[in-house]
Image 1 (tube, rainbow, N blue to C red):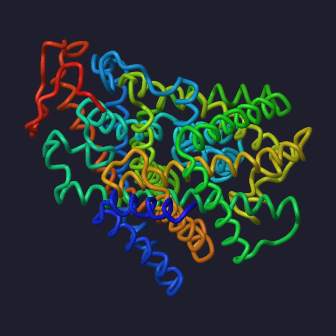
Image 2 (cartoon, rainbow, N blue to C red):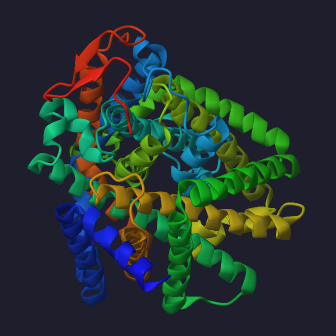
Length: 541
């Protein structure tokens, strides 16, 4: 790059910056990194204390908030508001459905899906949920284990992202509001006041939640990558190797996000989905196909039949004083908090790519289609792992005991025909899904800290990529999985409240829309704003 080009890049970075949101977010993230460098034990202790309070004293809140979101999105899918277009009434979607779904899925919880796909069901098969009430490693425990993976990674998880994406896309593409999380309060403060103190606080919280949620994923999946390297080479990586590998992955996703949505994220997303489908189908065919279908079918029926009961189950009857049971806190509350912490960046990214689509299209694609792809993966991986354990073809539980959950996939794939090839493909999938999740989050952080720019400067995205990578490395070295889970639960808490605010904003704004939308001769005034927009939405140019 020439000197003049470098100067233009720096100038653009400086001019577009929201100094308050960027400054506070950067300083707090840097302090967190320094705390884990200088006082790792004390930092981990503080995180774990806050985490324990949240899931024991306030775990019930996470459950209630998530169920409200699920009920609301179900109404959007089947109700009249589903016809609302996120843009001009006659506007065509910016991306084809295939590209849209591939990016949405890859940016969502896909990296976590790859991590927990082989691990979670076998874990529940051994340590059974009190809700299932079955003997450890029994047939009932096998069905209940797969059932709970459907519950944790199904409708509820994807609903959280859609709830955040829809109001942002609606106000951005119909009323020219900025693409940032604080846009959800537009009905209450008006478009002209989205730079006020409340909006700044919401965007700063979004930065914190994104850093915590993505650092969790980067750490967990990065650890899975490290375990895979050790599994295949027999060489121990160590702390220095951990930092080096996470750094390498950080460079990879930073390059991807610097290339932009079309050249970087979209192309890798296509590759992700193709490899994801291939690995699922090959494992299903080469694995215990009949067992997968039997356990998966029964688990799916139980998931559908008991969804409401599972959504409100706290396990408090199993503990003294009515506290959230350890199993529910360790799993369900952790997951719900993790999804809430991912809401800002995944919701913002989905909003970024949803221009021209209807509310129903976004909800169906984001919840129904994504769950429809997720369930076969967990059924295949979960049932295969349990079958291998039952028949003695692979002692996956012993590997988990030695290497942690990150090691569960490698003995599973090695026990199948073409095991060496499948193991390599699995390691590649781990890497590419991690890259797409991390680069979309870095893009979202750039949008949040530039006042809603669709294409933040490269410098901005590189800064956030480096900080997230550094934090994930330090969390893995000093606190491991426990510290990562604590980070997700702590940062996700505030967004359970903001998610309900997003629901209220949609109910208020969508409720004022006329059936099938306003005609051209009509007009609507945005609540709290002096700006009047025509029924066909204002020009975005």
